[in-house]
Image (cartoon, rainbow, N blue to C red):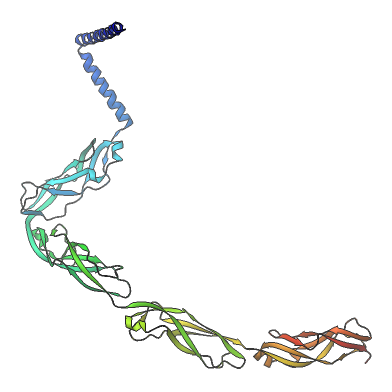
Length: 422
């Protein structure tokens, strides 16, 4: 078994050696064959790769910022360097992943002196392969180099935003009173202060944030192109609660008496409460706000008044300064006992109807003014005798009243009626 395995490996080795000799002999006899094969292979690979993932040459859609490098120690760039556009060649799949961070545009100022000069641009591709910069627009930019100047400027504070109602901004104290400004001589000369802007929106207590400083000129505008050292400073901000806000109910008194038979059924205010603000001591003594009294003397209908909300000195209203008071005046209900004669309806021709008893007591309910205004003919007590012949009958009584008046009691709901000749 061991000898047979060794013999098989020897035969394979002999076959491989024979193939190698034949290939080497063919290459020696036709030396151009190898070069042609390599060229064709490479060309075929390039063709296939370009067909499946073609190379695109186009302007990159985002602007690229330019930085200055190798600036002399005693010099500084005095002008704002522009952004540029780069024209890029890259495979289509690379375009999808490109960002402005993949391009570093710069001007090398090594050896340049303090003057304005045209400097060629250089662009490097970083963190990505297979991308080439074809061109830039522009190709050169103007760089104004000036002697570097250092100056001390005061640190000032500026509040932005708005504190909640009832709070006031106290002193704002930066830990550092001055900072150093470095940069081109002409720019540093424009800087008059370093401003720390503090957003105080929503603050109800003191804070000490670290704030970035902004170089500002005499006109209040930011001066770009200079450096501040240190760039940030802590600022102590004090917030004082000067006033408080409370919600208290509105009340109103009614004076006078409505007309006879009328009464005040309800008194409402709109709004029913008001927000007030003021010093803590002033608001602690207030549990309500009383509106001016409303006079209802002789009233027979509802009364509506728009009234100014009176406030003590040092107290103000948050929002509305007036309230509407509505006094609802209703008629007083009463009862009236009256005796009415009974009337016959639909008496047959040639006959008469006599009732026993001829009158009934009726109790009427309703508003007193309406009861007082009733006339005897306004209420009818009737009995329908239609279709009856001579004789004595017990028939129901019907009481008819004006609108708003109801029947509370009838002495009898039936009555005896005798129908006969006159």
